[in-house]
Structure formats: structure tokens, C-alpha cells
Length: 441
Length: 144
Image 1 (cartoon, each protein chain N blue to C red):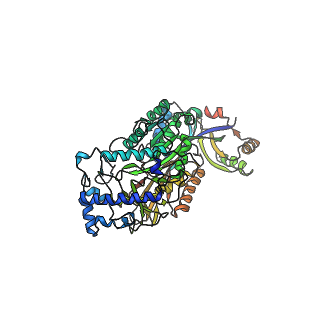
Image 2: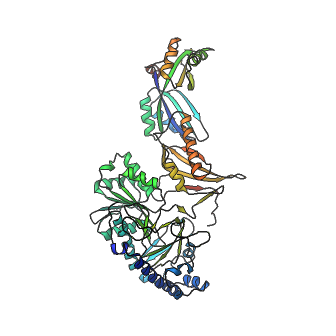
Image 3: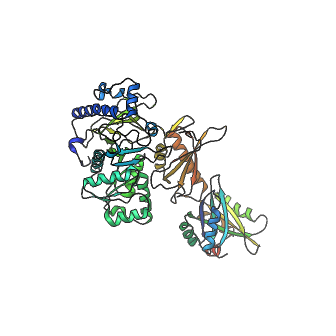
């Protein structure tokens, strides 16, 4: 068993019966609060004939209508805020690559909650006031940078706000300042590892001990690669700005799923097609109700992230249910010739094949009159490059076979030169869909 | 020393990539003795015999190319019909498999040189020497 660290043990290890009571109590009041203050919610509840007082506890949650991203877009920028702007102390916005960005607001109490949940996150990975925490998430409208920043300060750790990018400078700071905790996206952690290796950085002898990585889906094999390259423990952190930002859920050092901060965020898993709740343990879309948010409370917000809930107690002693790492999004799922494909599945396959790097690109195309084609671009590493064409052809064949055995889908594999697939300094772009299926989104 | 270092480079089929490579070699004053390209739809493998394999490898690696070196044999033969047949026959009679082969003609025009990539190098050297076929030393090849 890994050593267990807590920031707020009474909350994190709360008796389950007491936790459910607390959730019911908070749910009753947040539904009434939303109905009174936010026209969107009043319309939604009225439309299904549900009065706030009919929501007596968590057993009635399923009667509440869902909230979706387009509700926030339609009321852009502040239409779903529950408080006057005088009480809003901070604004963030999602990176919104399609259409209008999503704008979120925080009251002073919301910022306090956010700091608490990030403090729990960092502490669960073993961070204390003695640590130097390098925050290499982007600072700005994106919630990653400032979210981790204030949570680490709350613990009393020394925060190094390097923000994203300028990888060589990141490594300089990492070595010279003696960073012990690194926060960034998992793909950027790999970039740091790779550039560090090129610079001759000896990660084994640095104070760097642990990383909190999130903001994009990653795989178990990517975790192993990060841990090996950087000689650290890599913990997952999950969140989305609509709910609060990073800190909705977090991994302890058991690394066996992410504990959801259930006293603030009430989780459900639903079937994304029917909207019906599914029992704990079944895969589906994560839906979250914020129990304590003041500025932008969310009732049954559909995250589009696919996961499952684990109700079993964790060895660390926390009673918060765990969610497994995100296996994909119900809206980034590719459907190719009727086969559902998550980029993370292809990544897992590539990670297990010697000679490929963690950088890959999926190109989906549809030629007129032909079936959809999935092309997997794979970088050929220096180590595996052979003068003999048959070796390269065998590598190509192996990737094709492995992907076929996992997905039941035949793909085309294109070998490309190392470093030609763009390295990300933020969220990695893994898919180019030339079919333009979502053009109107 | 009969084994010659051939430099192989992974090249994506992108316009200008070969030009970048040859420009790099020119800048480092590297002289190409022979070259051939094996190609597929997406990429090719460029094979080079040069005057200075070590310097070539370093220069290309530093320029961001994926490079490896391979041992090959370079055989000298008179530039006349039937000469290559004799050489290949010497190998075939011993059951030696040829991975690939390419040829170039010497400056004088009297002799041809053939580059062989073989699995059984030692056996090949023996078989060719037994027939009195001349295998060039690496020094001779680099200074052709």
C-alpha cells in the first residue's frame, strides 16, 4: 500500500451515510437556488413540471433535466451566472475551438472551494508545504495554471509559475530551483522528458518526485512512460471549467482511479444515448451536479467524458467514489466504417510496440465513393530505423495487425520522420478528420 | 578491411527533402561515390557510399535526419557483358542470398563497381576471393 496523505481527512474520509445526507441537503438547496436565480433552470424545471421542493434528496436527482454545453453558449457570456457581477471575483473561459467559448465565473467562496479541492489533489500525491511546485499549465483564461497555482499556495508549497512552453527554460528551472512537484498536461510531461534527455538531464538524481497531470485523456502505458522518463510518480487529475476547473477528481498514490470530491460535485453515469442513469461500475457519460458553487452552479451537467464509477473503498481510506481514467469523450469518438475508435486505444497499441514514439496522428479521410479510411501516422525512431526495407515493412505490418486485433478495424499506417508530428505544449492534437462530419457544430 | 560503411537515410516522400539532404552534404564538403533509393508510397530509404561515412552520419544526424550505417561489400569488375553474372554466380553457387545490389562505373570507364548487401558477409568474401574477384578495401572505396 502506498503511503496516504490527506489535506482534509474529515471530508475526504467522511462516513458514507453522513456523506449521502450532506449531498442530499446540499442538492435540495442548490436546486432551489438555481430555480430562483437562473432563468435557464427555471425554464428547464417548469418544462418538465418539477418544482424545486419535489427534489427531496439525491434519490430524486434523475428527475432534474440535464444541462449541456449549448445552454452556456446560448447564454454567452454571463447569462447563467447566479450572482451579480459585483460578487464575481474571477472569470475563466474554455479554449473553445468550435463556436463561442464557454465563460465561467467564481465568487470568493467558489475560489475558496477550488483551492480546497486542488489542495486535496496535491496532498493526495504527497505534496506538502515543503515542496516546490512547478505549474507548467498555461496561465490565463484556461483554468489549469491559476487553478493549480492557488491550490498549491493554499498548502503552503512554494509555487513556480512557469506556465506552458519554452521547454528548455522549464528544464533549467526544474534543475536549478529543485522542483519536486510538476503540474502540466501528460503530453507536455513527455515533451519535457524528451527534451531533457536531449539536454542530458539526469532525472534520476533530481528532487522531482511526483507529477499531477491532466487536462487531456491519457493511457496507463503513457503513465508508465512518463514515470520512467522523469523518474517520478505520475498522478491523474480531472476537471472541466464548467464545473470548477481541475480538481473535480484526483488520484491518490494508489493510482487506482480518481476520487471525486463528492461533497462538492455529485457524480452520475448515464447512457449517453438514452440519458438513463446506469449503475456504478458500468461505462457511460459522466454527469456532474455542483453542490456548493455560487456563481455558476450546474445541475446535471453532461461532461461528454466517458468513464465508470468504482464504489469500492480505496486502500487510502477515502470514501469518495473513484472514476476510472477517461476512456474518451462521447463526442471525440471516431466512427470509422461502423467501428468506434478512441485515439487513446490506438495510443495504447503504439506504446506497446518497440520502435514507435508516443507521437502519432490519426488522419480520417473519405474519398468520394469510398469507405472511410483511418491513416495512422507513426514516427520512426532512430533506434528502430533499419536500412532494410523489409524491417520497416514488418514494423508497419505489426502496427496494422495490433490495431486490427484491438479495434477490429484495418487501418493504413504511414511511417514518418521523427519530430515531424507537431509536439504539443498544451493539449495534443491527435486527430485530423478530413470528413468534416461536425462542420456545423 | 573489406567491409565498407554505407550510410542509409530515412526519407519521407515530401518535396524538398532530398534537396535538404544533398545541400547538407555539400555544405560539409562530402563527396558522394554512389547512391540509390528504395522507395514506397510514403517514404524511401536513401543509400549512400561517400568519402567520409563518419562525418556524413554526424552531419545528417545533426541536420535532423534519421540515419543508420550498414556494412556492404564493393566489388570491382571489368565493364563488359557477363562480368556481373560471374560475380553473382560465385555467390549463388554457395547459397549466399543477396539483400540488394546497385552499381556504379569508375571514372576511367574501364571498370564497374557493384555494391552488395548480404547476410553472410564472411562466406561471401571467401566465395568471391576463391574466384579471384577483387573486393575493394574501405580505404579504396572512400578514395575512389
